[in-house]
Image (cartoon, rainbow, N blue to C red):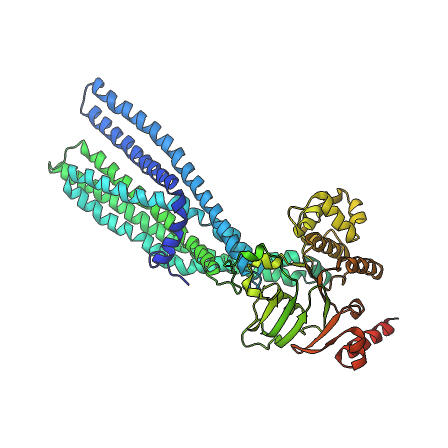
Length: 589
């Protein structure tokens, strides 16, 4: 974990780096913030001088320049008060847009291998909340630091000209106040990390609760789930209370220093006036200059109290962005995008496990899938069937062995080129909270409406879609909640048909369909499989009887392979699976 910004140049520079493309806007914002402070000081000093001259009985005409100067500086302060924050926030929001773009660009190669151990709510918190909180650093920190440096230098110089003793007194309190941001980071760094982590955990729990609301209600788990959320909320409140206590302590110390410094300047000025070492009219000016210095530093102190969470959010973001993808993309060979790839596959001595130290899912697997053939992978749950598909799509890479596509190692293809070779219908269909049309168009983004409807017709869902309130423009709800499981799966089939890739993967593609719909879709898929390499995963063995080759996976190995008739004749594992399903159906009937 990266330390606080005062101790970590790496984190500091990583936060500054996104500012570089927007350095012009940020510089302008800082300039306006400095000018705003200087204008404010100018108004106060001119007012003090005007008061002193009036008290000294100066002629009225000599007062006018100071009065007009106050009006002018007041207008300037108003203008700079608008321009500075406006420009700094425009720059900050542009930087946040770039940061989110970087997040999405980097997160995609991490999926799914690097993200399976992370909760969706935690990732959402990083993508939204942790990035959003960086706005404080980009919009407020640079201007506050610039003011905290420039204003004290100018004020100390002016005080030194008036009286060197006053400048020395002020310098002591400036040094003490300058230590407050350091104290803020020491008190808030670890607490900020805990706060961001607890907030992410609460977000994840809330998201889980919302997504699982049906099951929570169905099993009467409402009270237990509510208690869990209350405990998480109490933990967060406890940390927030501790942060509030730290912030209060810092504010109290800062206020004491500011008040003590102002009093000391006032007393020192009064003593110097009484001793004749300071002109009486300079007393209010000296006090105002000191006050302006304290105000500029206090803004940095206030900002630093909030930065602990900002840097905690940055650290959470950097930890994610620093992860190395489990699968590296190979962009060296672009010729593969121009040459047709023969859709033949070969797995050679493949060994793979999802986690170190756990049993291997695949152990020295060998299988060949000729171009244009239909191959089925069968076996009990956990045998490794879906894992084979994950390796073919390069969601993970095997620990040993290699996969050959079209005569070349799978890893020699750019990922986009590789995945363009596959159309996938998975057992778990994800639908976006968008229209039916756009969910089908996920198969091919540039498909016309006519092509979308043609794919839906082949998937035997076109007639159903026409009955929806808005037809193809009907919103399906989050994760397609407004549709049945069978309807969602037929949309997934339409996606795959629309993509029309040379290799078709059917991972329990008809598992959510009734018998009649399954037969209709099966007939359609039979026609569309012509000329394609098809890989089928099925627990219903009746769906794979016409496959050219059936591979039976058991304990991470190929137990046997052959066509349906040959495997039945062997009376091995496949025959036992068929008999078990037949007995199961007989028991049901």
